[in-house]
Amino acid sequence: MTFKDIFEKIAWVVERIVFWFCTFLLLGITAIVCLEILSRNIVGHSFIWVEEISMIMLGWLAYISAAYTVRKKGHVALEFLYKKFPMPARKALFVIFTLGMIAFFAFIFTSGVGNAKMLSRIPLTQTRLPRGLIYSGLPVGCVLMIYFFIVDLVETIFFKQTDSLMAADELAIYESVVEKGDAE
Image (cartoon, rainbow, N blue to C red):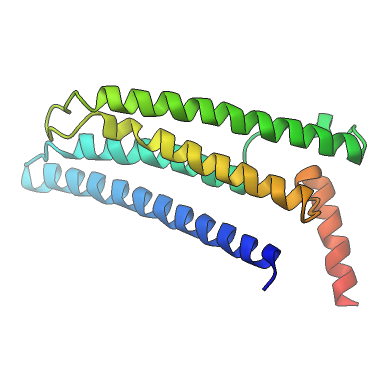
């Protein structure tokens, strides 16, 4: 196995773990909210812990799914502007942007750790869990975003993959041409 194969396999495994973690959180939030609705309407009893547990899970879901979206290139992009540049300029912009995002999320990580620590001293009202649990997903999400930005940078610069340098419509055309070439 080459370094590229190992690197891509690790990135794929991390991506799958993040995907399934987000899926578990979403299903968990859905299950406890449905349990609360059924319990309140059928039995007439309400669980006091549902709101706080779902807030913790929703906080983690927001930050971790943002990292997954970075990996899938699902965030908003200014592709109409990006397409106007030649490929070498796109590569330079990509590197500058990616390094800037890594620095930005490193700063957010340090702020998030401090915020989570500070809020961990304050308990939630019903469950008495530390309030910092809601916000502790932010540093974890930042680490994952930094990791996925580094993976994208390595794939683009060292492995010469060009999908990060193309707009969505260009990528669709490129993939259809490659697919057609493979079929022949």
